[in-house]
Length: 451
Image 1: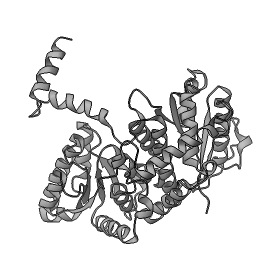
Image 2: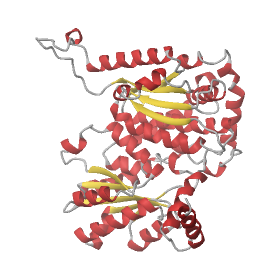
Image 3: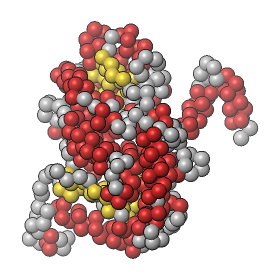
Image 4: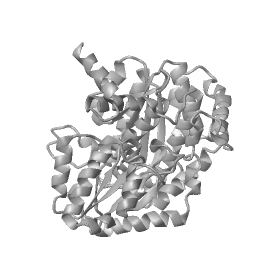
């Protein structure tokens, strides 16, 4: 079976000769720090060998729970924010029918995502949609006190109990939370919900291959064993024993750090030519943004969906400030086949494409765009994915996770914490007069009054 591959030839031409080879010792040191647990944030390295530690028995427990939800629910709401939902959504949307909510045949429940915003209209419309429907909830929160998710869970728990009764609701509400502590754990134990544990040594953005991601993905009807198998293979390919030149995570980390420190490329644009990959980019943005954006350092992670965004962002990418580079995720083989049709009048002048696969047109758009952007001074890396299935998505997830760990160590930051995320929460709680925030509340209101 093939693996995903990385082509950096259109990026290294923007670097001094020998730059990538020159990073070999730094990459080796970065990998050794991960393996030996000597890097900053070493208490959050549980993801490193997570794929190979997952047992068939554990996957069966998750699948059994998913089957209960699938058998009893028309819709399942995944309540979580950040790493507690992005990974699951990325995998589910990459593998689902693009119009799943319209063509649902009842074999799979509709998977919905909430708890990732505080939009009153969004939540009102969600609860209206669920009215009268058989639905379940997967509440994903380590603490149980994250505002967005806790608020959503309150609403959904009450609605579920009101619609089917408290006892029946226990069967379709699952908590993915801390092993022993926190509000979500206390609520789950009190109510008797089925629970899964978020490992203490795995941060949210690295948690796709824990129950955080595996349970929703299984509920959507996808093969979590194959997802894990792909990640296991990439764990080997990107392992510390792999030759530097053959380790895609190592080379990706080296090239992006070279572009950042040597060529002044401060922004990485993750690009896809397959609409199903939109949320893979969203997950990637959190992974790298939250991991590297510290100490006034870090490449800014952005994303574009091509060819769509070529008609909005294409001009800037082609001729704007030369502080960017692109990483393209290219899917070699689509799952469906559709040929370009003939039109007798040919008013659009496109009959020269008659009989070609739509994907061939897309691939030429991809190649043409990469050539144009490189000519315009934009370094370009390409990740080739043989096809969109669970196995290769599993590979892609681990490839990025390992590259992120290496890259963060090269950059010299703690890639596994996120202290800056707390700043907005402190202000929000002060403005809402949360008990315990009286001094902060007074200070911030005085500040606002004087502005």
